[in-house]
Image (tube, rainbow, N blue to C red; front, side, top):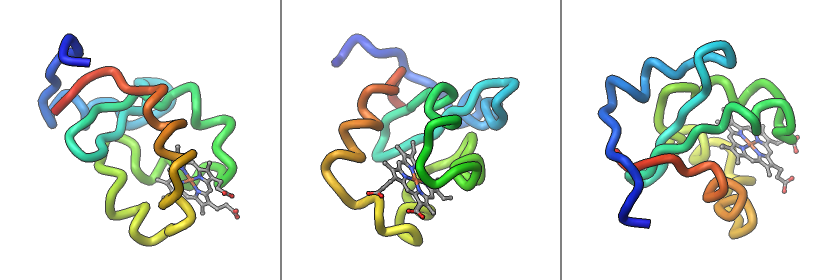
Length: 81
Ligand code: HEM
């Protein structure tokens, strides 16, 4: 929605561990995926993207190019870049 807060790249980068919270960005959206890390079917690899953009990782792991994965991601949206 339009009411989500705007976050800076600097703020996103701070959230790079389970302890600090795991945030990622995707197409201009900011996502707090901390609670998803433990249930990710691809395991701890997801932490490689902590504090960063998902795009380069999802380009490598093309399994993520499916509608239902974007639906999962959308549940964790907290703001926009
Ligand atoms: C698999 C979601 C980030 C690596 C999967 C699957 C889902 C998923 C649902 C199962 C796909 C299927 O079998 O149909 C997500 C979400 C992410 C995320 C919602 C971000 C919020 C990442 C990142 C990486 C990654 C950043 C790598 C750096 C993998 C790998 C698999 C996988 C390697 C395959 C596991 C296997 O089947 O052997 N992910 N993923 N994922 N993910 Fe992710």
